[in-house]
Image (tube, rainbow, N blue to C red; front, side, top):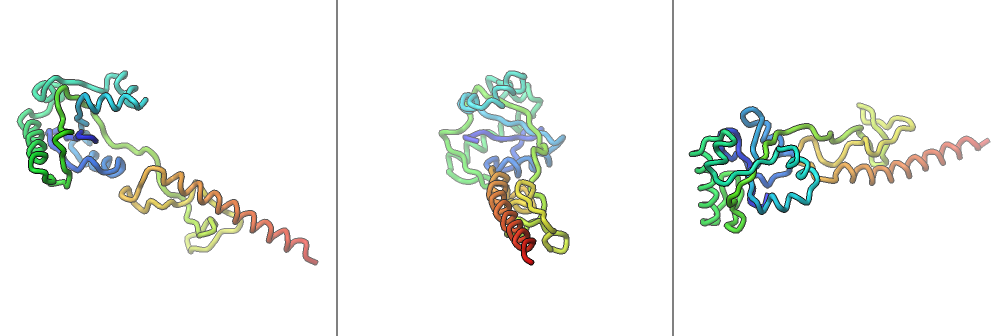
Length: 202
C-alpha cells in the first residue's frame, strides 16, 4: 500500500490494508453497500502508472483526484469530520511509532499528502481455487478416498491454499498445476507401462 488506505462509506478505515487481496476483498464486502474507497497520493499514483490495469482505470475515469481532504470528502460523499479523524489518527500513529487497532504501523515518510487520489472498489470472484481430490501420485480420488481407474488431475486438482482465502498466495494455482502435471505425467506413464507389460504376458 506504501501509505495508501481504504475507507468505507462512513470515511472509516476497517482493516489492516497490508493483507492479501483475497482476504481484503472479503473485508470490503462486509462494509456498507459492499464498497470501499482506495485513498492514496501522487507518489502512489505515479508508481501505479506502471500497471496497464491502472492506466485503463484512469482512462475510464475511475481514478479521481482532489486538492484537499475537504474537496475529497465533498467529491466522494464522505463525512469530513470522520475523514479528518482517520488522517489524524494515522499521523499520530506514525509519530508514536505504534500500531493501530488493526495492527498496522504507519511511517511518516509514507503518510499521504495532497493532492489525493481515490478509486472506488468492491470485492468480486476473480478465480476459484482447488478442484479434484488427488493422492500423492496425482490419481483422482472418489468420495471414499479410493483412486479412480485411469484418471489423473493436475491443473484441476486441489491445491495447497487450504479451504479459505487466508491460505492463498499468488502463484499457488501455477504451483499445483506444474508440479502435479509432472507427477501425473510420470504416474500415467508408469500405469501404462504396467498395463502393457501385463498385456503381453502369456
